[in-house]
Image 1: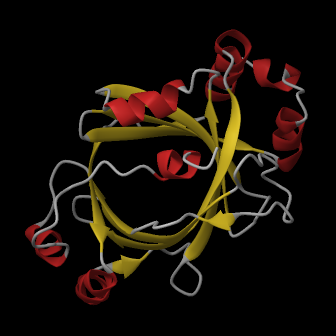
Image 2 (image 1 turned 180 degrees about the vertical axis):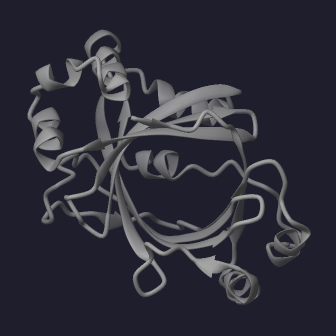
Length: 227
């Protein structure tokens, strides 16, 4: 498990297409593409977890100040590099904990085999096991979208543009390439800006969105509208 206990600042803005074009042009002039982006973007597919009462969903909708969510994530369909992630929020700040999983481990979890998750040397995996065992947490839905990621070293800034949001409805078969996802109706273009202790003014100027306020939009909540 790799941990980053530092809480990072985070802004989210819903963009119109014309906003995307202008902000993207400014961002490209001063920021670098994330080295993991092939052709300038990548496909993210995540499997989100929740309990029987949809605690994570309700806390997000209700704006609970301190909350967390678990997900398993892969990029561009690459099953050789899969992450279990726990994202914790405290007000407008967030942090993320992650652990690598194998495709075999993910499939075992999806098949209801949780014994391998009790390894004390993998605390995040063990934490998910405990919450599945004692809180009824289970896979809920697949969330899929395209991301354009940009980075800027001073301030450890990351700006991403997310679009083409799709949901797996009730499908939780994350590793199945034939698992059908469908477009989420009226899904917006979302810009996320994340940084550590300070946001350099050059980046602040690049991402200005006059007339648009910071939003608490959740891709998971948007996809759960469908089930």
